[in-house]
Image 1 (tube, rainbow, N blue to C red):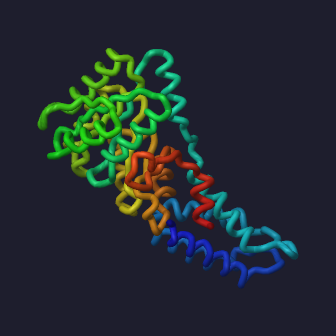
Image 2: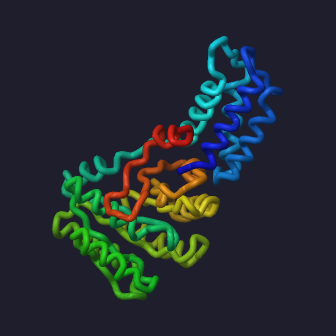
Image 3: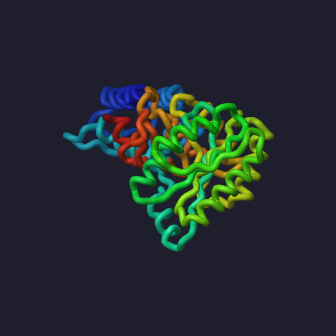
Length: 304
């Protein structure tokens, strides 16, 4: 994973070692090296503004820093980059499991609307998420509110049967907001803790889709709106994050296919452009292949 950024960060550390030894770091010493790093980050899916912000923060940390004899300049540089990336991911994370349990203890259902364009793994991720909740002792119903895409109802129904979770469906062409609302009524009548609402994802630039999603949000009044993006789509994931956040509002993010991401910059970008936390990452085809996102673990992997 993340081979692109790993190579970029190792390259800049090596460049510092060649140029700076046992002295105070001057701006002239590092300007060209860090500009090269910024370009490498952009090539590896870090959005331009985010890469620029990280580089400026690294400069502030390093300019004027005095290298002591015996101190490893590589470690100094890597630590400064790590701190800057952590800062860019530094939005408060949410313990969603505990939030759901707290609301369930009040005999109320926690409603989550999932957003994302077709092809990002939204349906599979919802199934993984539902299975994770079930394994944590949390009851779930899925609302199959994608009444647009042919096969969408059947696809999520198959997952629901495999993990033994109830599902509320609607006919194709039906009002998706009504499907979601019926699922909430179903949850309330049976004392279920969580309603997971699958939604259509025709295109992230589709005005009709955004209007449809806005109606679903208005009707369901969700506790959480989670955007699902595919790590392999690069800068397009960033544009999707911007679009959904501006039009619908995003509370948290799940990144899929992270195990196949050879670049590594999508996580930095989508969190930074939305100012919202990455909640979970998906990394395989099994229902257990989802885990809570740990910013420190992610950053350490970039330097592994």
